[in-house]
Length: 280
Ligand code: ATR
Image (spheres, rainbow, N blue to C red):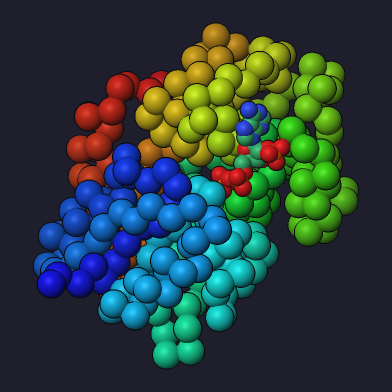
């Protein structure tokens, strides 16, 4: 029997690109690894993860909707994962799972490295307050954005995130119903899972400042609606999260294998297969 020593867990997970990304990185580094996708709803995740560990599992990526549960299941966690309250990378240690969160670093690498963008002082709107939003908020603030306005369908989650960040002069929350009255933003980040669920966000064009950057943390078809809205609103750049996906995977790979792979060849290969979403 082949032991899957690495895996990505999520629900749904069948369309995940992570197995292909890690296989490509492994090939590049000359490391033989077996990385598979495992479907796990939140209520059975703990049991499925325990079975994976018993069968020899050494590392796991975790995606929607399991990142906060993965944090709870971590025996220890990195500083950034603790701040985000969310884990996307699990590493098996003698003492149990060690939790990391590479989404924040992956987002900033994609924006500043691949796309050469300067994030400093950008007035930023964050849509969503789940696990993905939490990592993005901390990473963007660390990268030097200006004011951060968090808007979530359920306002109490936005307030909880703002409270956890603890920068009341820089971070504010507003109601979703108030989106038309917030002025314009230099950076709009969609961290909701609406696109993944094939739901449409109804967003005012006035949110997008001239030359603004609009970024969807999801990629492919899940980002279609947001990218189309951003283009129609006149954004200077509208990007999906494929770059983030590849960069966070590279960070996870380097935690597990001690070497950071070249991301551009893998990114470019996958981009060529996806419908064209990035605009410059
Ligand atoms: P993730 O790990 O991707 O962040 P999550 O924790 O389930 O997943 O969070 C999903 C986010 O998308 C939440 O902010 C959610 O809003 P609620 O907290 O109100 O549930 C948001 N979301 C999902 N569908 C949405 C929709 N149709 N409109 C607006 N927000 C939506």
